[in-house]
Image 1: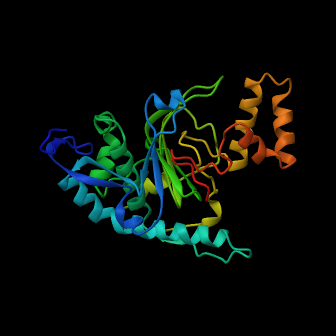
Image 2: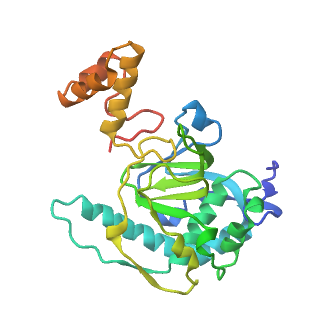
Image 3: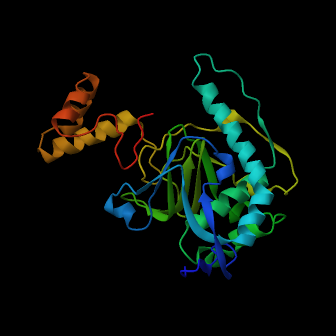
Length: 295
């Protein structure tokens, strides 16, 4: 981007004056407390926690036309969808969860806003290499066939979200999973570009993209899994205790303990975990300056 704020729009690919885009869309999260971690590229392999942003982050990535047009077409629906997700999370925290009515709205507009956000988060030139995604967003009436989009989602209960850009998740013995993940209460979204997700729990909403712009549909809440995002690592949905257990195992392995997994499980089960963390300079609350949330 030039000093005068001009550059190539990540969505349409034209050189223009770029606007200061709030990521995620400001209207859906106005006045809410949240944090976002941004992890991309080699940071995945280096084990970094990503950059930490309070109340989202801003980037000059879209031209005014794309920014205004997508906001006008998809912003209100995405905001309504997000508020419905908060109702789900609130209900699930109750001792006797009340029934939450199924969401009725325009799934295509939701999918287009999600893909627009992911394009904005990806590296330069991504939309040119995936023209079907660019055209899907820029043409509000365009639909995609089931084999043209692999988009999944989950309920995200943690206050700290994550945003990955295009990353490669690796697992021994498996092909790489190339994806973009964007998670911020109440929802997380995973766009699979190649390979297969290592965690099958996020549910497919690829069918959203096959709906017409003005087509109203029902979305049933019981289908959506609840997955925390305490770490910036894409596809990592461990609970706080699962992360604590891994930290203890790692420390015990460094100490060459003969049975680190068994000893770590004993420490956690006995309630000695907090003391163990303190003795080794770790933060039991998982509320680090890099953005891990204790709530």
